[in-house]
Length: 167
Image (cartoon, rainbow, N blue to C red; front, side):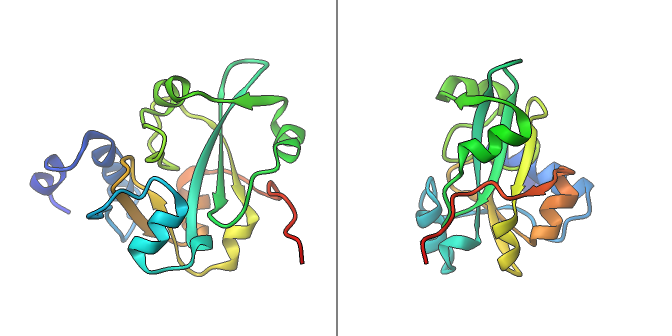
């Protein structure tokens, strides 16, 4: 992606594209025709399993008001007790908090290029897949990666942070 192409993208997607480019990531962000505010919408637009969507969930750590980013598989639900056991007590983050801390609006929160560096955890369930997709800073923006790339790009640990799936 050259500089001219980058300037035609929304600001949040430009930030993500720059980080991907600087880190040597092989895939630039794509802009989808329709919004992909939910994991299911993104999966449908890309023609992939919903579990292959790396959704970014933001919590607010109560002790210091820091953003906690949990990157989880689109077909899983975060277990807040497991997250709290790792990072300390958290609570819900409202839209204003998410925008201030990440620089992104809910529905387009990327796992990278945040306005303020969050405490980040990666859901181990993402490693079920060879290829995953994440939001690229805008409800229409996504980018392709592997779970290992997510570890490299964020420097975050992989953890068990989701609710058990009923079998």
